[in-house]
Amino acid sequence: MNHRMLTITLQPDWKAALRQAGRRATKSSYQGEVLNFESPGAFFGRMTERRWAIVRALQGQGVVGVRELARRVQRDVKRVHEDVVELLALGLIERADDGGVLCPFESVHIDMELRVAA
Image (cartoon, rainbow, N blue to C red; front, side):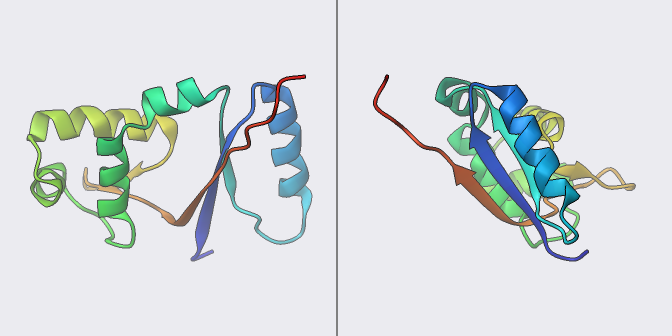
């Protein structure tokens, strides 16, 4: 599986999001992976602009060391390391055997819908 895809959803009903992901997983072909946030506040609280810059800097680059990553995004190594820890916890990036990090997703799609309150 070379082309990994991630869809980020914003659904307050995490059980529904889990059921939907389960339905996708039962299909015969790879449908991508899903990361759900309960609210826009939860999403934007964890996915800052600087963290997005790290994800973008890693996409398609293979394994990159944290020091090199900090150089690429022109930020302090300590702060980049803190953001890397958060991105690892979220599953947006992965740690390689040599200690470097990588973004395994060739595409990341954010699925967010705002509706009039009922």
